[in-house]
Image 1 (cartoon, one colour):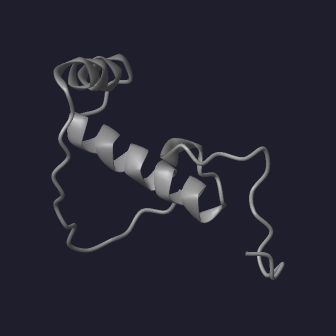
Image 2 (cartoon, rainbow, N blue to C red):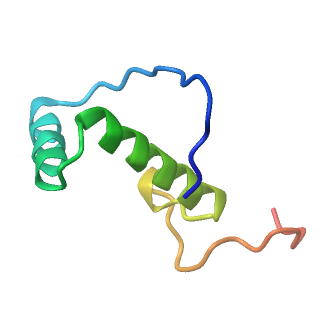
Length: 72
């Protein structure tokens, strides 16, 4: 996972209370701040999307789409 240097941009994410609680538990369990956990999760999610893994979007397939296949 690459880490950008320089100024970081802030984002806002809205979670329901149950997911927010789970998020805080995971941050504490893994000894990271909630901000650091969010950054790591977003980086991981973006890398997965870039590889063609669309499960998080509810569009998952068993294998990533072939690039340049010409299929639509």
